[in-house]
Image (tube, rainbow, N blue to C red):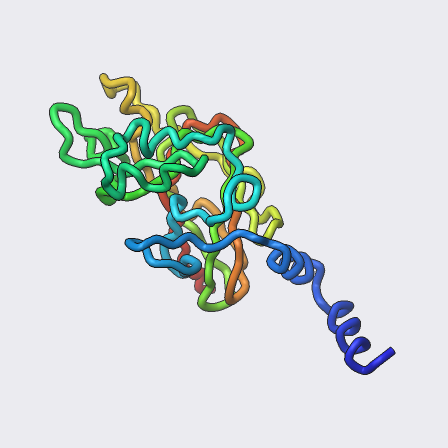
Length: 233
């Protein structure tokens, strides 16, 4: 056995199963970080907000799985009028929309039933169904443990799960319903925003990683972003 081959085998033998699994996943992954003229491009940065609507490129079965090929937000609920937000990722299967403010006579995402008021014109993933998933390429500044806040709506509660480099790191995460029977408008139950503080904590390695967000039960959620902050011991 040559010195080079021996060194490689020794390094592989000494590598932890988790690191080996992560490197294998990343070496085989064909998805690409999202980019466009407004957002720019490249993996999203941690610490920071990871927007779900900036899920990876490369299509169905690689960057995401959706139950149908139509975007039920862009170009359907939101008219295909040539504007950036109304046509955002219009030809992709993941359903996307954005937070709408100052709509009269009935406020939409800036309504009085919000637990927290989201930013205006914020793209998000919606119309979610169990079994759907999407990938998010990230760039982690420093190895360490991070806590993730989660901005969302959930008409009837449910569960999600998050992978890192193909490995489940959270188990099923219970998402509390934001349904409020006091709201007289039934359609607005999909627009009561909440922030789940420290929904989960995860150990992340420096550099490129891929998060996979799975819809496990119920669906009917709008997923805006995960805000990752370092946990200082």
